[in-house]
Length: 153
Image 1 (spheres, rainbow, N blue to C red):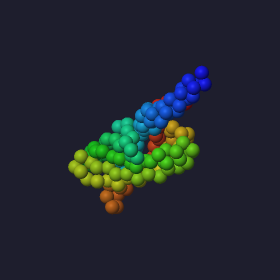
Image 2: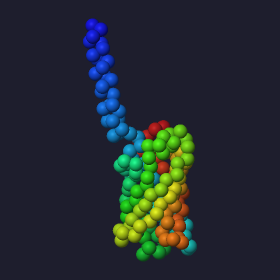
Image 3: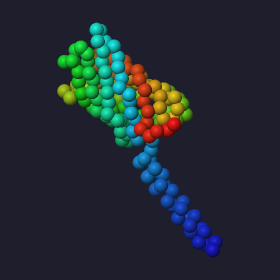
Image 4: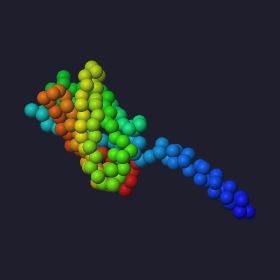
């Protein structure tokens, strides 16, 4: 009987790494949602919307749509990516501020530098500040909220 128990324990322990890896696929940190962001510009505003940001490796990526009012001809769409490591996620879970960097590219292939910070209210949602460097001299600053896709209270 003891040898069966030892075999059961050994097989169970051998399965743990596989179970942990599968749990990572459904991690609550796989998708982050950013509420639409808005900032003022001279005689107008810019609204920035993103699709749900999906995690791949050490980065989150999404499509974006920036609407400029009343200068609609300045509106653009594209893709963005921000670097966010496992260490950054651990800091968020502990309630620590995380600074991040990234880049975007609009549909005309014009690059945009991104910098920001996430200030967690808890491990699954909080406030976010995003700086988009449109040109060397033009920087748009957006403040809003983020939340990871699964509901956690």
